Length: 105
Length: 168
Image (cartoon, rainbow over all chains, first blue to last red):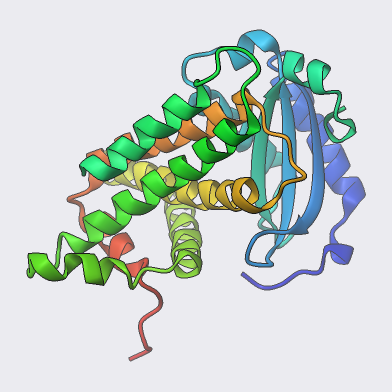
């Protein structure tokens, strides 16, 4: 994958794309936050933090839900065109309410 | 492969060890164990092709995390190009196989990054949902692998995990 410095990523476009994805995934997905940074081998990456509604987080096959979320997110954000890897972390609303981490707020 | 399946089972156990207030130690080890479950599954499957049984453990030591990441990234790209080609591929066993292989390669790619974070980034707080979503993903990866393990394209993926061959 060619190296694309994070500075060349259009953050406004990504913001808009993430908002579109969040709207499409509501109410299952409560909100999506993200950060840029290198992954463990130094490749430029985008790290998504996805807060799920509590009922959604209790589903027996979270991987099916994750697949749907990621498909829609990737379709909107087009990370490959941006030269980025994408990584996903999920948390329930209750977990976040308990931890109150600003990065997930 | 019993070891890989045992690791996956252990990951599930660790993720659910504490009924309330899961410990970070349990959750982090669960993430790491889930990754290693898939790591060892794929390596074991690759080394099964080596005829000398007594040398398979030695062969397994040649696999490197970084090269496996690169191979999985390439495989994801190939699978996506096939699945999203224009005109789209006809429904059938070949398309199904590519979907399953994409699932395996992508799962490996994701799990590897999560494992690195779990093992080395002490600033991150893990939650049970985060961990279970990863373990479930790995579990699905195991199931997908079981469906396609004898297919030529799946076997090609296994050998690619060793690294890029020299150009001919």
